[in-house]
Image (cartoon, rainbow, N blue to C red):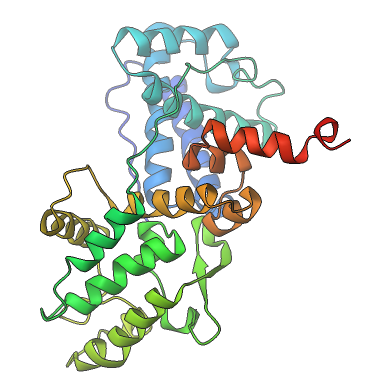
Length: 319
């Protein structure tokens, strides 16, 4: 993977540029080899740190990466605010810079992390669109199974909703990781973490129909994609964009005017489970979230659920 860093925009040459470039290149290797991050995430983190290096060159040209202090970071965040960047964008940039300074700590390049005491911008909870169960049923029923890709597309949406998969997890799903006879799927999630997710009978039915009939009709399958579940007509793995387009087309056919993406099915999966009384820890495991806090955000717990939880489990309510 070749991720280039453009330092032509830096005002200063010599020691400043060399040391910043060296630190960022070291950070790139760290994110790739030790954190095993995706190329997209690495590019974003490097761009975040480069923004800081450009700001420092313009405003503090004598300050090297290991000499940056708290007030420099605060001034940089103020600069981002003055540019008109939203709180969410500022928080994402700050996240990349925090990771950069954690790396410098690990390398013993610095003793004190200048981002430790930084409070990120306040971000409200952004609740993605969710489909009611009745809308899920309408969408699934709108898929014309008589069309060449109908069964495949039905299996795709069934699997998204039945297992709460991320779109990348769906396109990378392997036949060898399907255990349909016992109702489970092995999913390879972020950072190659594996998890086992139950899959319902409706999704199993359409997956089997697709695998045993439509997929077998493909005259040629790319060698690299021989174990990939969902393929296009040329026998190649579907892309993320293709999954988005399939979902969009189905919503149009179903007459559903909400802003719907593949992630909407994941969010609906979690929401419907929690509303049905599922244990939040179980939902966390099925979604592959490291933190229960993330699961709470994605399931946007309503006040009735929280109230019932307190009434049921708080010791003073059970004495």
